[in-house]
Image 1 (cartoon, rainbow, N blue to C red):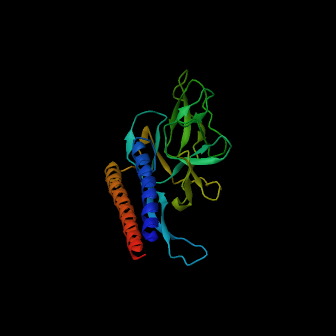
Image 2: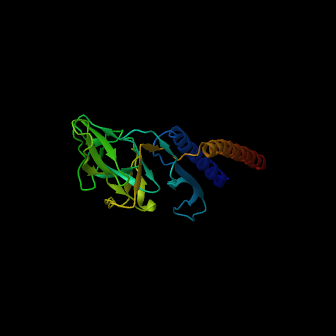
Image 3: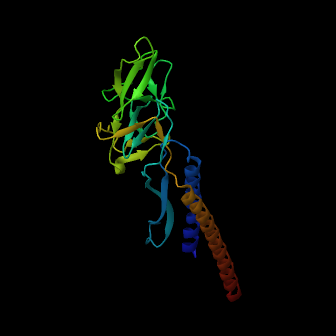
Length: 248
């Protein structure tokens, strides 16, 4: 009886966790460069003083879905999207590196190239990328950032830096609570010259809305089934108690 209770109870609990993951994916449909999360159930034996005859269900995150999202043309000079695999390197407040595919870049009041969240875009040679005043910015397919003076010579192009583009193995990446990716071992990914950008464009999130909605419905039905199993276990326990009382 307790086997049924353990399985149903833990299954219902982690079904709610999976519903939260689905809700998060749906909430980030319009988030540039978002990578959908995938979850799965697995059974874990309970080890103790006796034999591991009991098991409970846990919800384990398999990985992120690294499928590239659709690229939308914006025409904005500071918008970039990565074609295929690859990541844009940003510098955190503590000086460490993190990786994102959100290419909605901005220029800070101090003339530093930053992300929409205010993180500095890292230069391939190290440090931030500084933008001169009174210039227009162009970003090449290899991440080269060039400035074009608005006046007096608008045809003069001067490189000011190059965005650090990396492409580490997907199984080496881990997603943080801030939505940014890092290497599992805490190391720094090297520059990958094969990564290419599309300027004047942004990558949408790779969330499949239809799939996530179907998953939400399936999880709701699964939760109902697990609650019915708990009710059945309760009724069986009551009936067993009544039989024991009658025999006594």
